[in-house]
Length: 383
Ligand code: ACO
Image (cartoon, rainbow, N blue to C red; front, side, top):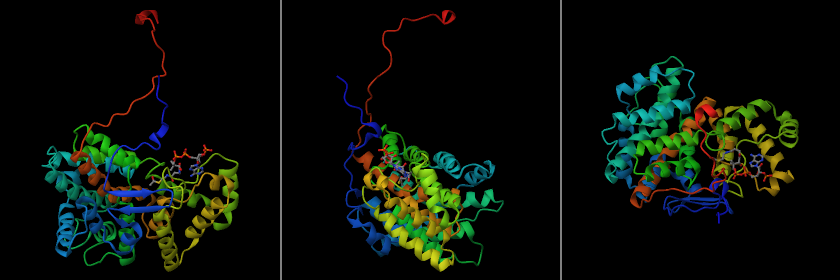
């Protein structure tokens, strides 16, 4: 007798984890005991990385060691830079990142060493290198020379420096602050699709780079990390706050489109990250003197939240909704939004990979076969 099919694996618990708690009914998120609100207000991204990898907050010296290690490891092998320059300039940045991280494994002396120590070293290295790849790619495709990471900066500062900087110019403090909060909020999120993909990959005994490549490929989709860019395209398509009502009627009520950045498999209340990012987006919009995109997003969210369809299905803005406004306001190119998500989530993926290795068993679900049976073999020239 066939088991009922659990489409999308909804409600299936596949692991025990100390990394994070996602409480979808109450809209709460906790990393290793600390609420996301506390972390967003206080933590440097490197503190969150230490927390997720080590299970506790670092002291001052440990934090400085990790910051310096990530900044040092962020330098790319010369071969990697040459490779980046050889990629087609119009490549999708997530396709570029997936390819580049896969290639990095071949220049990593720890690549095939699956010990805890080697995996911790690789987690630090990948976190730094992915930041550099993202920034370097944006410069290369625009015809500029990439900048090397600076050893004196933290990750958010280094990203902004490598993306927009030049010698003598310090990274913009507003952008750094926004990127740091974004990275903290996006670092980890339970058994999301890309983390699951990473865990499935390494549960076969494969290596950390392969797990992270699986994570990047899975994050790329518009139902997951790709939604931040899709949300921004949607806001740009709406164009003006006064177009929101008409756009909603035509595309959502009478059409079959989804509002990108709304809805979540787990959250049936407001995603707590969306609440923090809404405030951030509002403040940035006001201080930048351009509130139009925030107003469009806010009006569309309010329209949806007042609509019976969205109320019945408990559909609220998720993390990708207002993060689109935050990232657009600090002038990040829209197709770099999802790579930035990967820059944050690499910490969660690697924490989960280390956790998976510590108590591993092959992850291998089953399916119900619904195809034909007992067909006679017909030789090829008689078909
Ligand atoms: N707009 C309109 N309707 C929606 C939306 C939306 N954004 N999201 C879900 N629904 C509806 C579905 O049509 C469905 O209705 P039905 O029951 O009448 O068929 C119901 O809500 C449930 O939707 P499912 O797709 O079954 O929910 P699931 O848990 O599988 O999907 C998902 C969750 C993919 C996030 C979905 O809400 C969606 O497509 N959202 C837009 C994309 C998005 O923002 N993704 C980012 C998620 S957060 C992250 O990954 C970082």
